[in-house]
Amino acid sequence: DLAQRSDEAAHTWDLAYGSDEDSAYGLDPDSLTFDLGRDPIAFAKLRLAIVQDQLQQLAQRQLKPDEEPADLRRSLAFALRELGKTATILQRQVGGMVTRRDGAGSGRDLLAPLPSARQRQALELLIQSFLSTDAVRVPPALQRRLAPDYLERADASHNDSAAAVSTDFSVAEMLLQRQREVLAFLMNEALADRLADNQDKVRDLDANALNAHELQQRVQKAVWAQSKSSADQGSWQRNLQREYVNRLSVMLLRGASSRSDTRAAVREQAKTTVAQLKGQHTASANKSEVAAWQAHRQDCLDTLERALQASVIRTTP
Image (cartoon, rainbow, N blue to C red; front, side):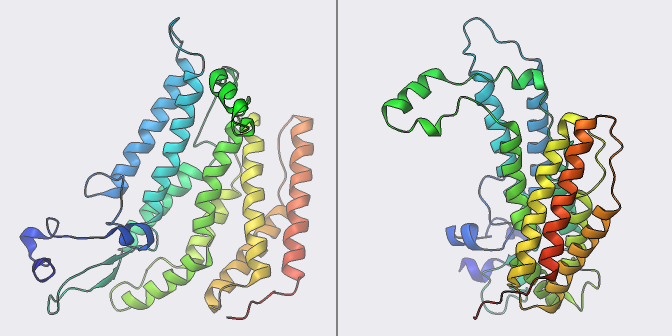
């Protein structure tokens, strides 16, 4: 009965239904957990703003005598983990497809790719919030105050799990982990193939649907944009660029996708990146920073050029 009535205008949201499998394995951006409200992108923007506000407050926060020094570390770790949850919400929008459980004769499309404007909005927010060195700022003074929980470390040592409780706190590693997750999604051949399939489904409705070529271009441009950040963030950008080069090289060598457009988009971005690296120079006055950029630039060039020249390793389906 619910399936038969799910197309009723007055009850479209009241009768909408999605299973645990839809949430965990599906493509429907409206079937998610941990997002509130009818607009997932608006909710994601709110969560990102809260994280940024929390980071600013932590940088200025002075602990009271009865507070634990480790509270700062816990709060910062929570904020960076919240970034990961927010990214998951936004990722479901890119290439997303509404899947309806209507009964026969409802007249609605049962597989409906998300409007391209909404996909692009989510993609832009992902890029701005995760693929930019300016997105997360943790001042050095705050990083020096991130004390470990010594009691937790002592308990771990008795349980032979001390390695899991680090004395140090690497903001760069936690940020890179969030960026790895976003790149793993955006640079996935399965997403590129799904975008192509979505184009086929809306060719009579939307001639400007988001495609793999556009997505790869926007990711490449964001990762290799000339940074306006301070010198201490240069290493963070190089970490992101190295991760991008690693993933692009694997895609070139593996040739996992059988789709012509997907493979062509990957090779084009590799060639674009090579050309950009050959003409890229840093204007930093810091000699050690210049040396780091030059070494990084040559390392990335070597990796991509070898991948472009190598024979593709094809797997038998």
